[in-house]
Length: 112
Image (cartoon, rainbow, N blue to C red; front, side, top):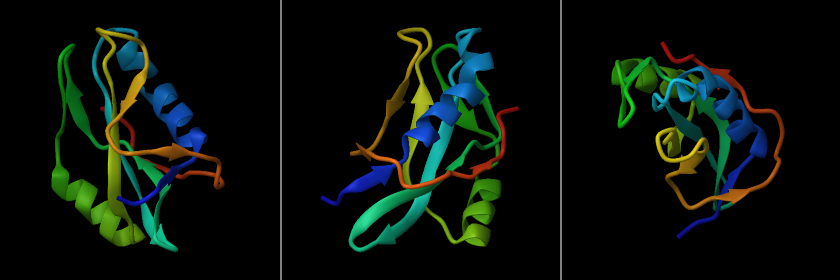
């Protein structure tokens, strides 16, 4: 198991992007991407791919678009984040995560 570092700004930005969907009880998903540094996985980008969602699921529309973005930016998938607005208005992290601030996080893409 390795330590994962994710800036709190990434979570706040994701919740801001997801808010229009969350307010209508539609799930939103995002990819936490980054790189390995000194044996740790460091989230350096939040990618919100083109997607569809309903009250009980969300799905990416074009995985190739996601892979092309990650390859172009030299990023690997570290984890993913998504909302469950029908249960609570918060995001659930789907990776082992230690939250700390490591700098600004670029956002790539927006939900459809």
